[in-house]
Amino acid sequence: MLNILWFSPCDCLPPLRAAAEQLRQKDLRISQLQAELRRPPPAPAQPPEPEARPTIYVVTPTYARLVQKAELVRLSQTLSLVPRLHWLLVEDAEGPTPLVSGLLAASGLLFTHLVVLTPKAQRLREGEPGWVHPRGVEQRNKALDWLRGRGGAVGGEKDPPPPGTQGVVYFADDDNTYSRELFEEMRWTRGVSVWPVGLVGGLRFEGPQVQDGRVVGFHTAWEPNRPFPVDMAGFAVALPLLLAKPNAQFDSTAPRGHLESSLLSHLVDPKDLEPRAANCTRVLVWHTRTEKPKMKQEEQLQRQGRGSDPAVEV
Amino acid sequence: MLNILWFSPCDCLPPLRAAAEQLRQKDLRISQLQAELRRPPPAPAQPPEPEARPTIYVVTPTYARLVQKAELVRLSQTLSLVPRLHWLLVEDAEGPTPLVSGLLAASGLLFTHLVVLTPKAQRLREGEPGWVHPRGVEQRNKALDWLRGRGGAVGGEKDPPPPGTQGVVYFADDDNTYSRELFEEMRWTRGVSVWPVGLVGGLRFEGPQVQDGRVVGFHTAWEPNRPFPVDMAGFAVALPLLLAKPNAQFDSTAPRGHLESSLLSHLVDPKDLEPRAANCTRVLVWHTRTEKPKMKQEEQLQRQGRGSDPAVEV
Image 1 (cartoon, chains in turn brown, purple):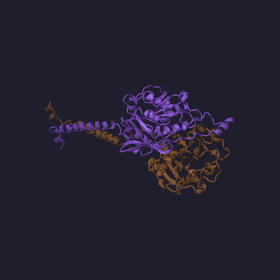
Image 2 (spheres, helix red, strand yellow):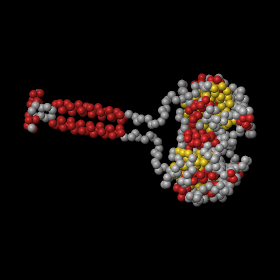
Image 3 (tube, each protein chain N blue to C red):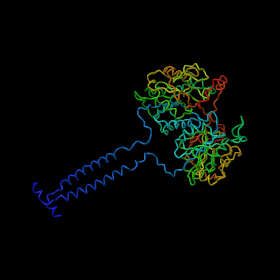
Image 4 (cartoon, rainbow over the protein chains, first blue to last red):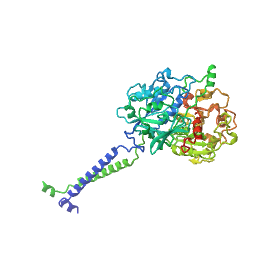
């Protein structure tokens, strides 16, 4: 047999050619597999975050008081649950305080730290009811200034949103209670969106009345004929609209209950308000108020030189 | 040339053998690459979550009132930031309410829903100060019963922790403010851990005094000689310790300010308390209280048949 093969005309060429072709195929397969391995891993199972999703600019005025840190910790933790959110925290103070600066730095949020002191003439005097001078007016206007490129940030992100930024602006006081669901309701606001607010105005809730998807009135007990009988926590404004109306701001001299109207009258006709929260049938924000803590024992201990350690931040 | 090759003794065997060896090598490489592709993707860049990490059982008594939903939304959102947490929400009611059941179902938390009505004799009468009958005693004891395998869940996870579960139990009322950092401080409690509480007892804060890593006293203005002058929000207990002392529970007849002591006296010697929060120098929980909302306008509108829509949950 061997002899015959050995001396017969060589017939190895076809198997050699076949082997070469097989080698080529396997090289191809190897390079395919290597390419597959180089491919980035699939994204984790999270909702996609398109760059186009508008940013929510949350404007929070704040002032020093015993419960300030508690309120801001609670609010910052709520905001940390919301993607694409930028917190504009505006202190009513002469300069940035260590308490607020430290809290912002530790929050993990994208933030801008602003400061403006309320002029003395507009400040509440001891014992005056809150409506004589509503708090936070200068601070909210300061945030509008920053959004419009007029600067003034003392910490965090200092550049205002670049031209063409899709966003929405919401005025969120530091004592209210916010459901995380509220923020997705307001994100795609085209002009001004509205929704009910719980536990405000002496009612279980105040809010727009909606028919056929349009706002036709307001459920409120107090001056229902105000241009916009809505609470500060009950609306959001598209950023492009605010930028297109550079004079729209809050008027610190507006009559009681007309502060929201003083901004909104520049921006929108009441019939064009965009109802949210299931046609304004769901309460997703509550106008909660935190009691002022009593410090009687603290004063007693302090007189005995045994007060709470002032080095401990509360 | 061709002729010579054609008729020379065949020398194709070595290249054929080499080709066979090359094919074998490439098959090996292909199966290696395929195995690599089958390997699970690397874990995302998150802290590892060892199964050994103890679970935090947060016990929250709650009762129906105007701010109940706001408070529970706020608290549930804080708890949602804490890994390996199990919420035991105990209603003071005759049966589970739709408000609480719905809120728990929507919370995304691991929870157990319990219900127990406070006996009439222990309920506050209109106008009585809160300390006459501290709220939540029966509800906290109900949660201890469930943890000890005595059942009673009306919703959520109904099976108690299996024997040998590593865990820690914390009593978190629904109106306080909790920093997310607090929960990691308590997670690795061996017996009973303690820390300061802000804005309580008429002071900026109350808390243990620590020397050389041990609790040597308490900063408090009110009855400093109580066995454990600590607030409900100021301690956590290891689950194995609670299970090892099956009679340890809260005593509803304990004198004012002694409710915490009525549990802790069963569990630990004050000198063995484990100080947390940087040797009790950081305030990570605040005894905030939410104002009862005024409903004067609501009552007026209701008399006119124009009250807030009762179908809207607030």
